[in-house]
Length: 221
Image (cartoon, rainbow, N blue to C red):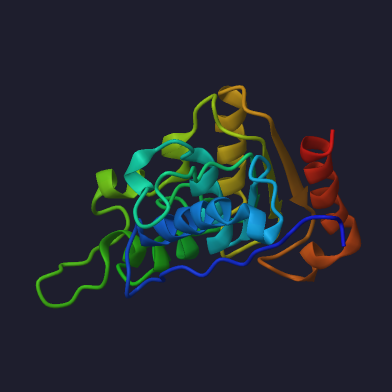
């Protein structure tokens, strides 16, 4: 209704698949869309990626890894997977600090090898695979963090997080915002007062209009 084509991307999931499978899949989808832009009547110079929660994580990973060849696998490799804008709703940005500031019990729970972020990085402890918590292999965890890839070439970012989120700490979005700003990236942060994780606060006209206006400001100048 706002004049944008919207495409939903499916990707491989934990625990069957580990990082970077999901990011490779999203980038593959972007290349496919560029390769078929005429068929779908798309402007291949104006691609945005938007996700919430784990999708927000994927959006941030894609947005901060423009031009990083490690994630380019599959078809249409002669097309770019770069995006010109990224929208992250309450996604993790440092997998080792998802529970930061949410209390000792929640923080301690993220040391488990059975958390989603641990399985994303290390897989399941099964057979010859030892598994492990997300902090058991700092190098692998860092490679899966959007924060690791932030640099001044990143596209504009719109970030949103609920102040009452107890699943993914608001700290995650704050630290990404700060690193983007430190690198002189065009970034805007909204903390939605009283909003939890993926609750109705985010799906109201005022919030959706912020997203549309942000897209308009960058794509319809």
